[in-house]
Image 1 (tube, one colour):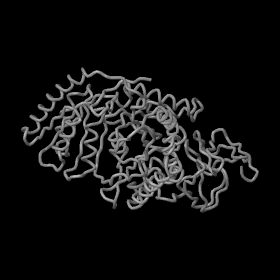
Image 2 (tube, rainbow over the protein chains, first blue to last red; image 1 turned 90 degrees about the vertical axis):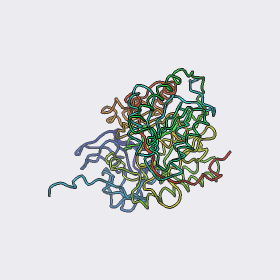
Image 3 (cartoon, rainbow over the protein chains, first blue to last red; image 1 turned 60 degrees about the horizontal axis):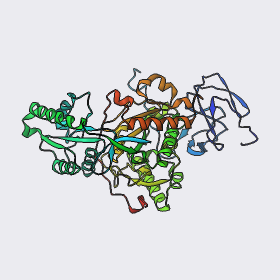
Image 4 (cartoon, chains in turn green, cyan; image 1 turned 135 degrees about the vertical axis):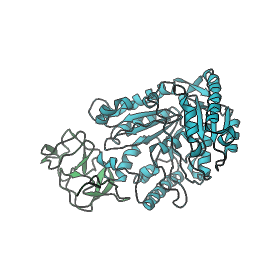
Length: 108
Length: 397
């Protein structure tokens, strides 16, 4: 527990290790829904699909993302509590993550 | 618990009695495949190596696969001018006590004549294999591998740790268990090294992951597919932490390379990344390349954990598919043997699913078909690689 926060969180969210700064969604949570993260109620601007992560704590740019109690990459920009934590705000500390450009070949 | 298996001359026991048809260059692939199509209802499996250039790794893999405990007889298909050493392969199979025959298409009279000769040989072998009795077999005689493919954010929460629980049970019962792959353990090297039975082995484990990180960095891509990211995995090290959970909690007894047979029970890491400078492209170009290497190291059964939903099976050894994601399971239930996603929905615990995987493994070892076997999946892929032998610290006594 950090900064007097409780470990209470939404039952749809999973905390894998007390050291983690992310929670994992056990099921898909849609945009606009309210989730409890620590003591804070957060309205999700962006949905979080099953198996995806959201921030449990405020994460400054450059800070390690901790899941399973282990570092899984670094924040590329500041991340707010309840924000979706994924390829748009995290990078690997080993090899860059490869994604398909689904819009490639589309009419301009 | 007593299982029943097919006893081979080297003392190992198989859980299937397969006639393997192996083409030794792509030019013999069609003929080899046509031979097997006649026997769709029997255990006649097609494997092969497509290249015409010599490769010690491919030669050794084919030797191990054709003398695998699940194999009862082998038919080799040569075009006639390829580099593959069919003479040495045939001698090694014959020395293992298995019936073996080599058909060379250029000498046998072309496509039709070779197909006819191959089918006749197999029909004779099947009659003999059907009469082979099975003998009692202990759980300690099993070698079981685990791979994951089509991973997502649920893999490391449900399927992988549940398979790890089954591994712990197997290791406790004296079986050999093999996990992989070093390119998907990047970031886990320190915690993994701490589980090694000797500090020197721990150093070898660390070194194998560093080699993988270097190899993939040179190639410019990690062992990470776009579907992994769609499923919630953000980086290779996150995927690694989930993949690592497959290994369970047993001490790590050794580090082996593809084709090395575990010398005794215990948990082994397989180093699948080639040695030396980067050659021949990506280490394992798709999931089945890993499954083939597990089988070459003696695995009679392989666990395959998937989140996004793979439908693959394999030639030569049954694949038990463990589905980590409950949504995927509902879509692809016909392809999945175990619904580990129940854990995420509070309908089962990790221990219960681990127990279910263990119990299913024993039934499969006794002959029960897995979903991919029943659907006829026999994927196989073997490409160029090169390895140095493992060092003395890799298998502490």
